[in-house]
Length: 84
Image 1 (cartoon, rainbow, N blue to C red):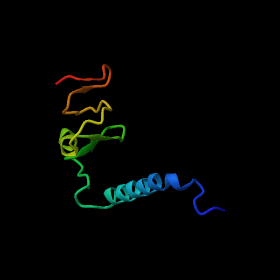
Image 2: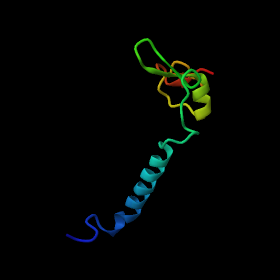
Image 3: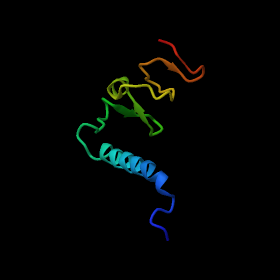
Image 4: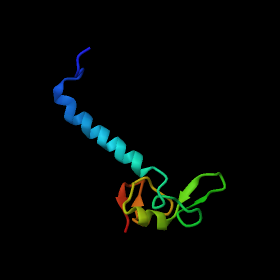
């Protein structure tokens, strides 16, 4: 089997992917900055789903364009536009 089965031209792409995977693993670790607090960052709906609060969305800093119930950015999923 060759040392570089996908060829040398893909080494940069592979190293970028590996870097992003490691960064994601660090971000999702049990870091005190990333922990969610029930009642402040989210609450549980009667069906058992986590519903993120406006505070959580503002802390995250951007709109995910998923049509969240408490979106402070005013995104309307039906029209794909921002109301505010």
